[in-house]
Image (cartoon, rainbow, N blue to C red; front, side):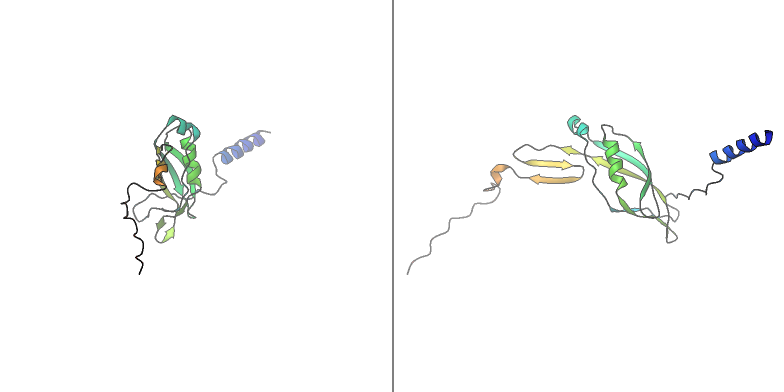
Length: 163
């Protein structure tokens, strides 16, 4: 009975401290022969309704590991903004794809920090600038749709002279 209790405690201790699991893969830092990962494709994060109503702007900083396959892993929020924007930033970066960092010509997992900017500019109903994050769109005022006032007026056409 005594040996059974001791072996059960040892088994619990070894499982709890991961002695039976394979060692974790090394994560590199940029520099000393390790190149930085690059963004290959990204999805712009969306504003949360709460942040839009409160007109919150700012930057969310995320710390993550870009693995050998170019996927973002272990994403944590290093600098919070609140109002649901932290979660929106994480959701967007989870879908990003990267060209992984390299060491000696081989892809390696690299620790990285990403800043996600949130900017909100509102536009009047008749036109103006509107922005979602870093995408800017121009909506011309309604009176510009027919004859833009910023274009020079052209002289009227003369009818062709008859012979």
